[in-house]
Image (cartoon, rainbow, N blue to C red; front, side, top):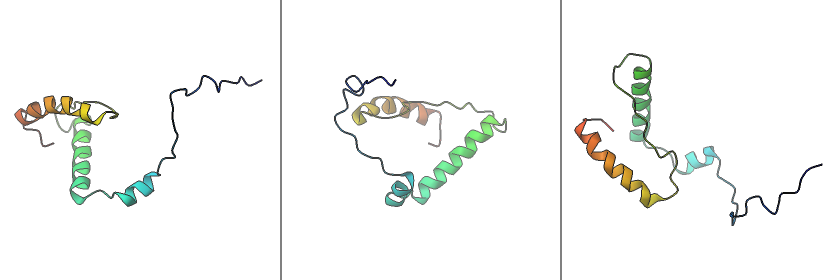
Amino acid sequence: MTQDKTRIDDTRIAAVRPLMTPALLEEALPASAANLTLVEASRQAVSDVLNNRDDRLVVVVGPCSIHNRPAIRTPSNSIAPVNSEADLPF
């Protein structure tokens, strides 16, 4: 028998909206040529490090997702000077 949990599931969700498919999103907001070039170059750079063709260190910095847009400025403002000092291309 299936237990009825409707009284306790998702109690803080006010509304549910369907998400746009990735294909429709890409059609509505296509990436610029500069963005495509950056992604391609970044993927190649990381691949080179992971495959020992480049001796640099790869550092992944979060957050993984952004729920509070103003809050992202704090870590990005902290990272920007380090990025400039290290002469990183991104």
